[in-house]
Image (tube, rainbow, N blue to C red):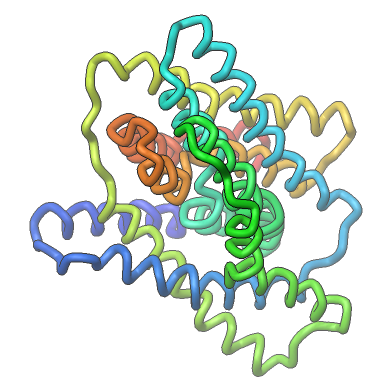
Length: 300
């Protein structure tokens, strides 16, 4: 319970600072830089070398693929039926197909399932969500914005992303037997800064600017992200007889709120920024309540 309270406290603190303390311009960007380039790689390098290789670990990656491509198919069909603009279809595909599996997902999985659950979440995020964002996500943004995707830039983005490189290095160290204890302790110290800083940054960036015409799209998008996607992942897992933490974490990661980086990408390509930012804020806040609820029904 104390771990869950910390999640709420850090986000609330970020909201209050943004509202009343007049933080320096670019503060959230600076915090995100530390989280992405230092804390997150350190956490990945700490956890993956100690992860027991399990034949079911392909499933969390597959769950992220199902969440994204299921969203793309669903919103393309609904958008055609309801006459949505291409920008709206692309925006919903990005923000509701890609979950906040690191900034919110990591702290939540650790709070609910400890370091063992967090290690599985790292696999889902670094081998599933991030490569999707950097490749197919960029392609979707380009397609619905009427621009051509640059394959070289996509490859460069993946191959130079510090947490992804850390994941590859962590797999190699795992196969070689792991880190010495003193180095693992140093990585743990750096990685432990992720939870408070990432959630504080989330609180700083929460925004609500929703028009009445966007309400139905928001409800449809979040229904997929917070309910239908985890349900489909669960049904697939049970059909394939996946069990234990690989199934539980896959369902929970599929149910995380929209991804901050996906919303930023949608903004860059001018895919309904007001809708994406409101969906991001509302989705993240709702997920803080729906994730523990889903975990309860899963027996966690």
